[in-house]
Length: 262
Length: 262
DNA sequence: GGAATAGTGTCTTTTAGACATTATCAA
DNA sequence: TTGATAATGTCTAAAAGACACTATTCC
Image (cartoon, rainbow over all chains, first blue to last red; front, side):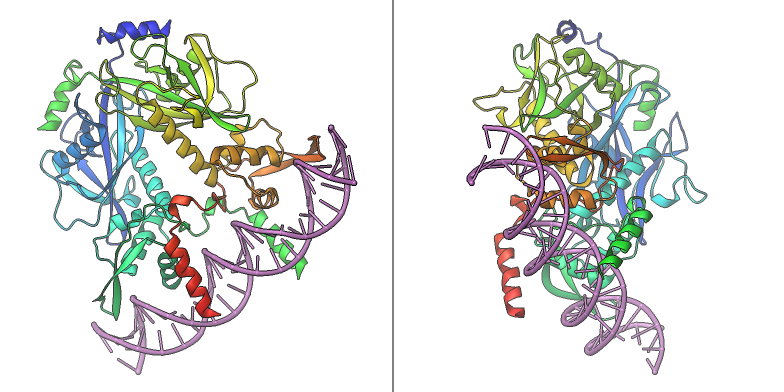
């Protein structure tokens, strides 16, 4: 009986498989109009000198969220008390770490562009890299399976911008609607019509509230806003027609149907 | 240096914290019009005799997904080769298992109503329970923190029905649109207008494809459909006005704005 | 016949997308 | 002046929600 075996293992911890549990943090921000991720340069074997996500072992009496915050602070100097930090998913394929079996709980964090330089407390180097550059000529090739984790994190961020108010986590408050629009444009990699964007944001109850002040932007004055406290957006702010979901033949069908009716 | 310590731990596995890694599976189905979850009665300490999610230790060379499938099969006799199984999230609060530190990777599975009785291979008993009954007078109180895992799983399922074609995982194919509608009604706990539901499903490209056959339903004949192969729905099939997101005062504001314009 | 369900069609309201207009400020 | 941006308004098409209507079958 499996449950019987589980009972025995209770009192002999050396019996259950020896698997290490770690946390990795994908900290995203928008710098110079580009979605970027915080990476550290590994100072130890394996993958010494390669860039990787900040992370490390979970302590035996430490909650997973606390471990993520601690490792982020230890390796990059970034402490995110106020910013958004959520669990992304867990990566546990055998062989993903050449040393031993490691199950890693990945976290996704969002912060405004950090003016202070980060890093260099524990890791040998730490900096933000534009996610589009990863694996290309202008960016690093990541250690372990971290490129997959970053890919999943970016997709999660893109999706959550649609139906939550998370975009405000990327900007310092107060912010202008143009600030917020540039977040969406950087994360989604599209350009949005300023007028329609404004209408949608302001017609979504609780998304943002005006502070009453405005700010000189170089060309005219822009109203300032603050997060409205609502987490889920209703209605959602959908991305402009996802390319992989638009079937040309169906568009043809719809056009023909329209033509028949006129 | 933390990375230095990590290097040393590489070659002395007894150094890193001793944490057990398990998987738990939340297998959902729709039975008798109610969203239900598969539970097993625990035959061993702790929580002996209490109902819990099927699950167990991950083997040292086993992928997490494989562990979830194996434990589900071992404890309940359910093998889901074709059905949907996805990672939900990972639960790792210290103290969630009274024996030792356990980090559990939870999975969400969706299956059609299973005609054969399940369970009784490893666990002392196994059956589906309506999720609304859990913790109440008509249902069991779950072991560990499993009620929280089930709650998260149900919310995930409700959300994914909106923007994916996952609802088809709950029905055997071929199915009628009424079958599919009953899935949405059971999972969301609402009633939907049959006519509007039909229009939305059929106007979503790739969601379902007609088989050309129909089936006697007792009252008339219903066309039969099969999943259309599209995973993401566009446009999405949103739940009718989520109550917690509807701000009465904002509705008042919109009504006043309309009045001013006329 | 009455009740329940499948399938089709129509009307209104809301929202999204495209675009025009005015005001303001910098170079 | 020219160009870029903020803010507002307008028009059209698409989508959602409510509802009417017919056909079919069981009781």
